[in-house]
Image 1 (cartoon, protein in one colour):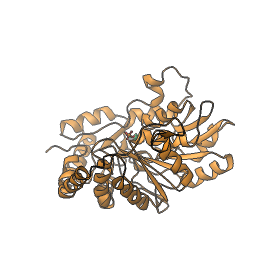
Image 2 (tube, protein in one colour; image 1 turned 180 degrees about the vertical axis):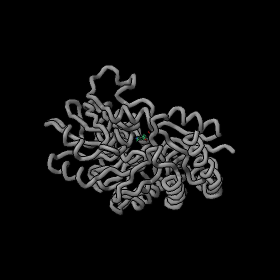
Image 3 (cartoon, helix red, strand yellow; image 1 turned 90 degrees about the vertical axis):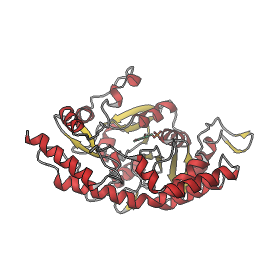
Image 4 (cartoon, rainbow, N blue to C red; image 1 turned 135 degrees about the horizontal axis):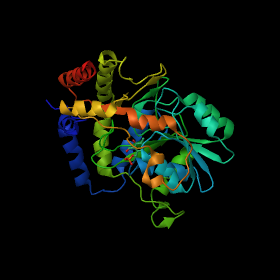
Length: 365
Ligand SMILES: Cc1ncc(COP(=O)(O)O)c(C=O)c1O
């Protein structure tokens, strides 16, 4: 038996008829940019997140970029970001010309917290991007209190947090804006690239919409130098079908995570710590092991796919080699130790059994 890291074809098969119907509807409509499919998904996703607004965009990186541009983050500004994140969080800041200020994760956590952010503040700090990494919400209340005190923008990177809860409320509207990716492997995944930004600020939403549409509100009237970063109607229609299943599919992920929590050897392996105010979307189930590489090889020999999120920290990437970075020992350690186990809504009990048994065998030898 092979245990894939994530089986995307099973999800498509489950919803095949509805997906086919949505695709056919778009093809027959003759409307291939904007229109009712995009608006319909935006409204549905805003409703799901409990926010006033959702702006559909082309991908998660563009969601972050558009939000930072709408917040008027510019060269000379500093933006605080986690050291431990996918590189898109950093690239979005670089592409505005602002300065990246990386912060190590909080002690024993994968996410950054208000204390780490406070220690990195300077008079030039303009924004902070808390990343709900792996689907685990950051502790947003203290972050928002700090932001209010220092007049900072807070842009949540929610690319991995569809349906995650912070203090009982879905992620999407705790900060000034939240950027989403619908990359196919995400909990809500498109059939290609897609993304969105949610916000409760109508002015910010209007500005993002304009920037993402060539800086225009009306055709051929360009008010600013924008991008082409729109959500395709085809992706919107397919995402609308999948959104109806997100909660149920997240519940299936949570059941697997609960089994891993209960049945993996927590004394030999560091299992993810979930504060009582957080409910993860369980986008990823990430363990820490000193002998990570040997463990990954052992699991691969048993037919179990794993991934490292992420093997090289952003500050050690060639793309950022020219810059001086502070010491980031926790991010460095995570890059050496993290291992993401298979998890997904279509993973069978037998597959989960196999992962658990294989891990026990590794530590028994
Ligand atoms: C934390 C994080 N931020 C941003 C992104 C960028 O999203 P996209 O791949 O849709 O550009 C991703 C996912 O790929 C991500 O995991």
